[in-house]
Image 1 (cartoon, rainbow, N blue to C red):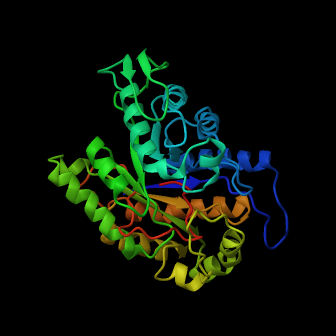
Image 2 (tube, rainbow, N blue to C red):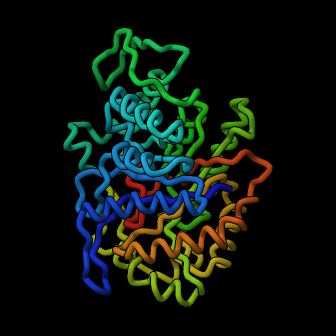
Length: 370
């Protein structure tokens, strides 16, 4: 199983000191974290996309990832997610192909849609069109990146038609490096299987067992479609903190994690969730403890989901960069070597899947997209 990190550039005051870094400092921390992640041996560095909120400062992942590409050479540069439902797929194709060229073919694009209302309002997109936009824009993106059809003539429902359009630059990679992001409905699972893509599931918000049916559905539909089993790639994400001992980890992280929940922006229809730290880091979705405890929980999640990639969200709640860096160092030295062999009978890589029932996201939902 591959281990990566995921960040949304969340910008909050430190609940202990009240100190709040500037937006420029926060973006610099993100870039420095990516450089550190590569040095430590993480497989992926993943940057999320949020718009029009006060907490998250990354609205243009390709710009941030281009800055990271200039300072790294091997780590996979991923988006978690790219809001393909809300963005023009022609511009997405151009921007991310440019990033793929600049990084020497290190791009992985996770395609999703915002579950916050603001992008739909600002971009004049009816929220009820989300699923259809995601499907149409993803399918067009794949065509624009296909070398079998370098000039695309196309007509759809949500953007002007294309007549023999060839986007430039082309991808550095031979195949489009695209995954599908999933939330709480099976629509995205069907889309991923129909397009033959791996899948990333948003697993930060609900109890781990509620996500298992979606992982299983993805593999079941994949097999029914006659696709090779080894290509059915899935991944997951967790809020994570690591310290030398479990007591230290929980003492240090409790207030930062509570700070992350306070004043969180709610998706439409979300059910506010009472913050219960012990429940979240015990049987719940979060991971907090010593390296051994983190290894144990990652192993149990892998037994439950059978996934190939796990993205760790560490830099939340206003936690200082030094504490984030120390947690990353412990993951690299004491966790990654222990979990690297999980799923060794499958190719390395990753994707994340979605929960079964159409439950509304809770305040804990971190991805901002499905």
